Length: 313
Image 1 (cartoon, rainbow, N blue to C red):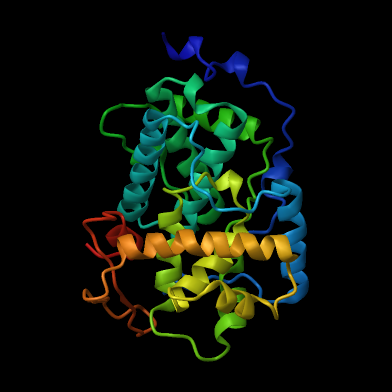
Image 2: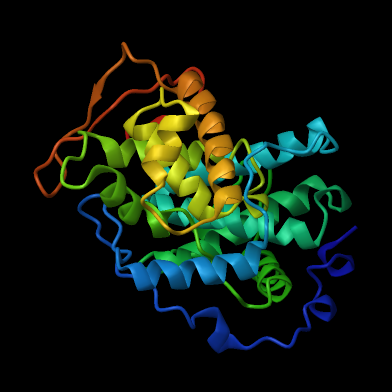
């Protein structure tokens, strides 16, 4: 079956797109000197606006429970392979961590509308490539040529990639300004830590953001819940339910049901922390452009992508 007989053919790419909607969200300027700095606002009104958009997109989906038992092992493996490729390519092309996370968001959004099991493996890999190239166009300051995206098993040409990009854009209705946990990271760090931020906190939060993409479908979990849980685990991975509730009680963003979901997500993050963090192993990263040092613990054997997330080769 050739490309012309698949959803990538021109006749299947007709849509009532509004190109302005793709970029209606003003993208924040990158801060290349420190990958743990994200310029999202800490203003309460801004956060409330994000939550309103999030509620519209996610509804009542808030609980981190991992993949459904009905999701086949083979489909989980295909998705995981795509994420591994996205993370490895992020590292080789020196993309932002947010770019990689956003591409996984596009991937899960796309397949929430067009079930993963309906696609050939090569088409899924091509779509993962398209999701990363689109995320790079949204978040990176320079345009990366399509020829730079390489999948070892396949040799996709530029035209095939462009058709896949159009298919993703039309399926997502050109709404590419997805909210991610990165939008809330600075807010929750300041709420939970104030001026006393532990060393390496940002790196650990980012590491958890990236690791959780392998555990859950991002369309089933609200970004604000993931962000709050990740920050709490990065601060202290031994909190009880009562301690978590005490930490989040001053933050009037959610109701009691969402607070329960935060603790459920916190438990999942705890498990991730145990599997990918090795307390006896400490890595001191080189000085950044700003002259700061970041320290991060990890276990490469259990999470090979961690060294790519934090930029360690």
